Image (cartoon, helix red, strand yellow):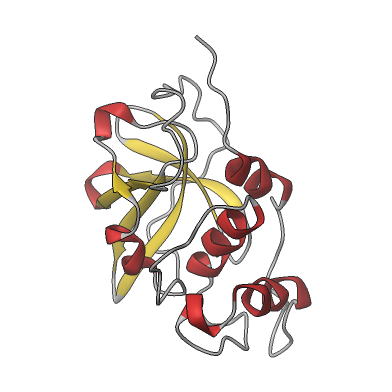
Amino acid sequence: MKNVEPAWLVRARSLLNTREAPGTANNPTILGWAKAAGIKVLGIVYNADSVPWCGVFVTECLRHAGVNLGKMKVGVRAMAWATWGDPVKLDQLAPGTILVFQRPAGGHVGFYVGEDRTHFHVLGGNQGDRVSIMRLEKARCVAARWPSDQPLLGHPVVMTATAGVAVSRNEA
């Protein structure tokens, strides 16, 4: 059975390799995502791509796909996504599931695209200062969520090849 990717994951894939601007400059694309989401959803005025932007990226993809962000009040904070939407059991993940991870001094959020024995393969923003797919340890995952207004589509994707997919240990 082939997985059907939700619109927000299609949007996320279209943004692969979007990068932070070097130094004190800011990428206008990333700042544009924050502006489009607005303070009501992000919870802060977001004005620099040097501020962690994984939550901004998730917000952009869901917003662009027309997902109702509902009661999200601090979308810029990765850990806020741990209680948003509906929970998904780890043995029932589907491409596009929102995964939330612990990291030193904070959290990280991105989209599930697959998994191997020890790591989830995550498409996220602010991974190596860009939108990328990286492997994150399963043990660091604290939540798996799905938009409440969308049907869960698909099933877990087992990745047999991991060559070339970097392991991330700190997404700050």
